[in-house]
Every structure is written in structure tokens, then in C-alpha cells.
Length: 326
Image (tube, rainbow, N blue to C red; front, side, top):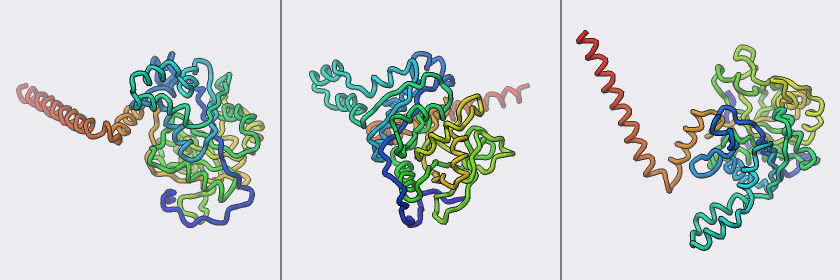
């Protein structure tokens, strides 16, 4: 097992090829079928996590890491995302007239996070295709990719660490998390080799959603990438793969073969909002962490759980009494 990035060793010399990363790409064109019917008319990225849509957490993470240029790759029926990160003059005027400074700031904050741009993917042809849509905007600069289904707790510094690793090693950097073997088929999976730096590995191979029996490791690729612009040429050469889509994992596999892909091993707080059960857990965890909501909500939650446990004991006792009577 490779130690996570938290205990990283002193950094090696920065290669001259490294360039400062300023741009982030947020793919947001998916159909959100796992959350139907809620996502029939509402983008899955706009589902609320407490009182902010999921995608706002992602943009806040990018901004906190110093990425001040964000391109969102959207699709049809995603206009709500564009509106959320735009100014809402009528609403702002109404709140200002009421003297509601707290809600006014909350409404204005999304538009102030970064310089936000939008482009449409057209057809949902896979994550690799979504990244290709960003080619003209990104140019020949390194850039980050943040997936909206993966929320990293705001108290974590994963993206900043990945940017630092990019500065040291150049090339591309992926975020890795060790998962149970029986779950590896849900992710892209990395074969890795040590670098001599704790929490940082060299990625020697990648495979999209392998079976537990054929997976090269238990290291899953999670939704954070810092990519060298060479990935665009690799994507151009990548044929449709699993599901008939252009897979970013397949393009990164070709780059890994040249020794230019590294991984940051992460064991912090990550929330998968693409799964219904994990989405509910995310809302509860982030609500509990809030100073304004946490204390009262935790008290209620403890009482609610205690009530469930008591009800369970009563139901179990009733079953046992009926068995005894029989």
C-alpha cells in the first residue's frame, strides 16, 4: 500500500517544462439518468447539496486552488447551469431593497468565483470527447479537469497537491484512491510504480472499469486530473472504447506508456453525488460540518437514529413474542 499524499516527502527539483496551471474544465453534459425523474428537467449538476448545487462546490474547489478560468462543457437542457453562474439582476435588486445582505452575497458569489465560460458538447460521446471540446479554449497550456459527480471536501487540498506535483514532474497527474477490489469495476484503474516520494506514484498503465480479477491494482482514478496539452493529440488518436465512447482513460494509457503520467494517492473526504445513497450521505455529512446547521441538525439526527433503533428493537421483540406464542 502506498501512503497518501498527506505525508509527502520534500519536493524534488522543478522541471523546466512545467507551466503554471490557470484553467479548469468541468464536464457537465451527462444526462443524469441515475437520478430520474428529478433530472428530467433539472441538470444533475444542479441538484442541491444542502443549499448549493453540486457544481458550485466543484467551481469553489477550482477557485480555491488558484484556477481563475473555468470552462464548463455542457449540453442541451443545461441552461440552468449557465444561469446559476451569471448575474440575476432582478433577484439581486429585490434582496438589496430588503436589506438582505446575507442572501444577496449568496446569490452573487457563483458569478464571482472565476471567469466562467460555457461550450456545448453536442453529443454525449464520453469524457474524452468532452475534454476534446475544450481544446480551443485551453490551447497549449496544462489544465485541470474536475468531474461534478466527485465532490472533494472543502477542507481537503487534493487539487492544490496535484498542481504542485505537476510543477515538479510536468506531464499529467491523476487522483487515485484505494477502493475495495470488488468495487474497482466501477472506475478507471491504474497500475503504479513508486517514485521515491510518499503519496506520489508513477502511473505505468490504465484500464477502464476492469473486473476485480484482471485489475492491475486497487487504485481507482477519481474525478480530478491535471492534464498536459499532449492529451489532446492522444485523444485524437483514441478510438471509441468501452460503451462506444471516447474514454479519457484510454488516452492517458498511451501517455502513461511514455512515463509522463503521475498519480497522487488520496485518502481524504470524497463524496460521490452520482449515486443516490452516496448523495444522501453527502448532504448529511456536509450539513453536519456546517457551523450554522451542524449543532442543531446533529442533535435531531441523534434523536432520529435513536428512534429508529428503538422501533427496530420493538419490532424484533414483537416477532419473538409471536414465535413464542406459536
